[in-house]
Image (cartoon, rainbow over all chains, first blue to last red; front, side, top):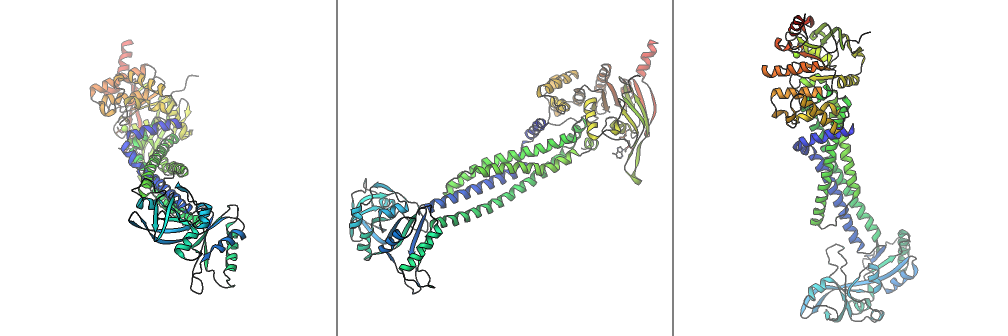
Length: 398
Length: 240
Ligand SMILES: Nc1ncnc2c1ncn2[C@@H]1O[C@H](COP(=O)(O)OP(=O)(O)OP(=O)(O)O)[C@@H](O)[C@H]1O
Ligand SMILES: [Mg+2]
């Protein structure tokens, strides 16, 4: 009986291609909108997650902020050592300091910044070497005049030479030899270009550029097995003690946890995705009402046909099933077209907006199931009406 | 005991509407149709011919009286059972052809078989056989819009025949046709009757009624008289 209804439904749809298409338009738009929205949302989330992960995962950034006396008290290497030695779960701690400089090479100037870093820092932040090599222990402890340049610097200053490795450049009035190029670390956002940077051993930058042993911030990477809130508590009390903050005095430093940023941002994007998808879902319901409308019109239009079917012995439930099947088939068809369109839209929009395309099978399956359900829900009423027609009246209908 | 008549109507009444607007279309129709009969139902417009046919076709329920089909009381059957009875025993030919538009002749003829659970090939074969019987095999894949009125009516007859019904009900089957086509259809109905199908047909034209065996005259919702058709009378007169 279902096979018969399917056959009849396909026949009817084929015979009225234009009407069938217009009927399903609402579903097509609804499904493609929902899928596009959710997929874009996933893409944005993935994009942000990637940016955040370029900060390094399972990391704290610890930096000084203005205290109650209105001044900023920087950290130094002893704070770094204290954290390394006294906090359980710390994998590595590294200080960093940076300063704006003008790089000069072969008579060209380029505004960039010098970052005093260590291998530990690069390791903690997950910065990889693209060409050349890392600093050696000796270079780090001696504060040698060697540097690792960022991709932007290579592009801007060393475009003319085959390889920047081994070249000598000047940063303000400090000369250094390029020993490596670091791989692009993606943009964390906030305007600056993180690839426009030159790394030098931390001690060198402290001595030659900053003129002090201060560091700008500490990057603390920790073992994911440890509870981050407990670690933050431990960090806070250690640093308060070291900075002699009395009870009641506010912290003059801040700890940012990348895991927390990650969570906050993805839950915000998640909420937005759900909201936008919900708005798109309304159009699905509107599409369902559209189907019901057309089906009702079609019941009226096909009154005679229904009369004929009833007169030659079709049971009421067979007529009902026929119309219901037709609605469900239309909706499923609309759902499929919507999925294809949604795929096309999300791929092209992701590309246009520069987000990664993240295929979400769940939303595709869900939209399809929902379209079928809409078919059942909004097809039922017209189908019932058709099955309840009086055959004589129906036959007489013009 | 002999076989019960195929159709038996006793004191059938039918009232349309209620209260002041109520109208009694049938006022107690008595009619017995034996298997193998060919009945022509005649009578002035509004005398209740179509109403009676609809009741016979189980499309409508009488307000009172007894309707027995093959000895079974139809009033006691459920709606679905009546549909099944229609499906199993009855073939309909309507005045307005009532073919599905944009649907080929073969598909139109197949229609009743769809509800009998026949397979695709069974349906197609039976439809082509029925179309062949009405001489329309070459037109099997044409839609009603491409057929003449007479051809359309023959498609409608093929549709009524495809299920091998016991009874063929036709309400003014030639009402929309010129006399030449009408004669064609009548000859065909008589042929079917010769093959054993009981035929009930409403007509306004005495020439058409002549093809029947029995002529029933309706008037004001009652059977006025029932007689042998002239053709039969002549035939028997010639024999006797
Ligand atoms: N559904 C209905 N509601 C109200 N009155 C009806 C209905 N159907 C038929 N009638 C009335 O019942 C009477 C008999 O109608 P019926 O159709 O049986 O006549 P008929 O003999 O077939 O006439 P005709 O030769 O014109 O087809 C008519 O007066 C008609 O107006
Ligand atoms: Mg009539």
